[in-house]
Amino acid sequence: MHSQINAAIQVIPRSIARHPYEIIDVAIGVIKKSGLKYVVTPFETVVEGDYHHIMQLVEEIHQACYEAGAIDMICNLKIQSSAAMPVTIDDKMKKYTQHER
Image (cartoon, rainbow, N blue to C red; front, top):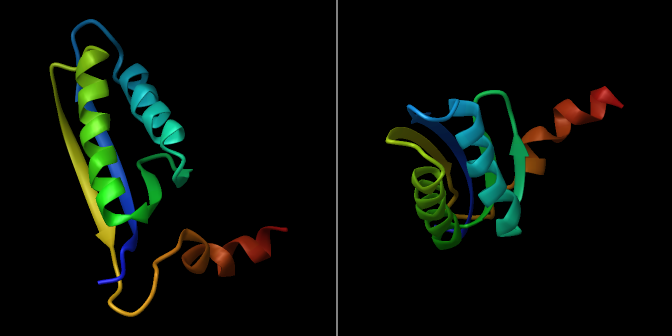
């Protein structure tokens, strides 16, 4: 497996004290600080990077969400990898973004 992957990360937190969107914003903040390439969408955030860094990022997201007031959460994770080449956001999106210009 090539080490560069794409991962779609969806966090669904539950909290008594805070609105879930506030905790999701914390998760997105962790992703922003990671330095990895990412795209925020309405239902998940897609991250591009080395497999091990992304797995570490998922752990950091969990910790930050609990520190922000989540009492529990679901984290849906989708991973795309390739044996032959890096997986990039741009490769998957270029045919769509070219038409938007």
